[in-house]
Length: 624
Image (tube, rainbow, N blue to C red; front, top):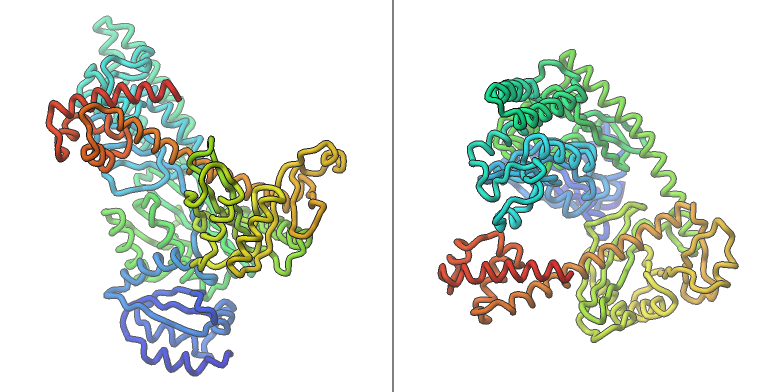
């Protein structure tokens, strides 16, 4: 063990005998593990008890720890919540931690609206809406929403468009909407349409079919044959869709998540299988590069569930692959109840149906584990090739890429995107509005953004910097690092520009040229190599991120200039409007009443502003 052993043991003696979170740090002060405890002193002391069986992870962890801190909490539940927050903040090496890039698609019904509509949502929020899912792909959600809108005649227009209509839109004309925007259907009747869509999403298609069939015959008896035919078409569409729904557990009336897993010394994978009212929606896998050990599995599972259900739909029951015990089950149930405002059951899969579902989840986990390992091996080979071709001392675990975006000499912006272990890492993304450069000067803009990015960065430094550009951009980037006193490997990339560049390459070579400092000839990768795909993916992501920021600023500036064109609006009132709405579309969606309630406004002025905003918005959309 390390020389700090006795010092750490004495430090632990000072820990309180109460709930809390402990943070283990390495020599450079970096947090490498976060844990929660019902009794802090007892839990942390167990790491130093050599007589107990200890996992491989614990042995490596203790050898790396030089400092241990703690944060006391009032309850164990608070400790569990705080642990999840700190894992997200510090991203410790030895913890199971969810990445930021796996958000499920859901179907959202804006239930509290007078005339609700259906959305594709990526986050479950406590906003009074109804959420259904999660679904495996966004394409499935989009298709389902389109089907529900057409079948139940639900509006698909935006709120701003809905509030500004004076006559029915095309959807009404082709019988795909009942026209709530212009009062052609009452709130009560429209609510019935939404209720039918909700019932369908809950798997209650029999009830809907019965209601539609009854309505169809009533209309036919009244000789309203055209409307009866429309109801018949909806009845047929729902019946066909119901037949396609896969029912795995007949008679199940609750929402259920089943947690499967598979792992070995190379990693650990959790599988989430989702059942909704007896229908299987699909599954999703989460792979962690952390050695599986049965001794640590309970902690890893608890940590995974705490993070996973932070912004996902929380079902009625969660089926676990191991028995956590009554105390931990109750702790998880209290956590999920606090987040969902409903009673949630957490239990071990001990019954026959539970065992069957868990076996399926574990089988999926095993197959996805094999696929994840294959991807990991390909990525590692690609990173090693990057190391060799660029003559790096270390394998580039973290790579940062910079891109500058300018439009007609205005609103110059830059982006920094990052990869960790060959995977995009959005938590490190940064975007910059250039301050010191007037007009178009990509070189100076690049120099500014590099100096701002690496002047005492909280997140540390990358193993490699990738610059989108040629030799000129590379020289400017070198100059920026020299002024900061840094020596970070860097390379730039640009497409081949001359015929000789193309002639020098074979048919399998990529079009990108990679330039190293002090080297005349560029480096060329094969277009099929994983190294090339990693680098180009990162460059394309940097370009996308910079461009999206540039468009956002340009749109904001355009909207601000449109606010300047409103009559009877001085600088004071303009600031009030921008502070409350931000854009003309938000202002239009708010309506006259909310504008009139603002400081310095009255009903007459609000009506004038709202009408002008509509006209300006229409002109803006036409011109762009």
